[in-house]
Length: 145
Image (tube, rainbow, N blue to C red; front, side, top):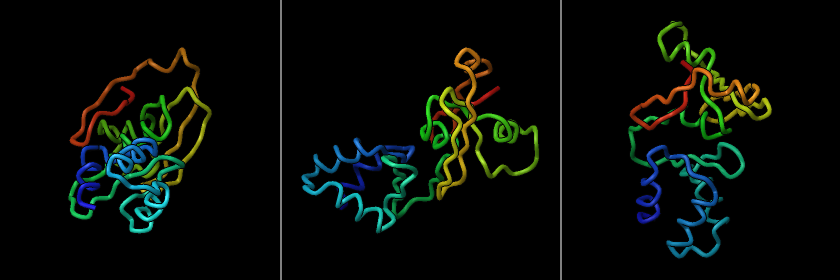
């Protein structure tokens, strides 16, 4: 199990896709990969965000999970915008509980253990206007200026 934890810790965002997780488990000689993933979910070592996407929850860690990075990975291409962007840039004092992102894909919402992530569709030609990459302690994410 310690080898598995070391392999999962190589992902600083702690967000891992099913294919990557399967590859890690195969390399560690696990045979029944999907059974092992179910076991890891039952032990709260993995938390599902959506089908095929998990968050690794290390047993001993003070590191916070970046909601901005979750928002970018849950549905892409997308960037954090609207209320969250205003809060992030200090333009509104209220806390924001729903992360709203802009995407070129169909509007959608995900209710996860880490919050609600909603996506609003815009035309592709408008997508890059005002887009910038922001850096946080936990990684980079796309944000609206």
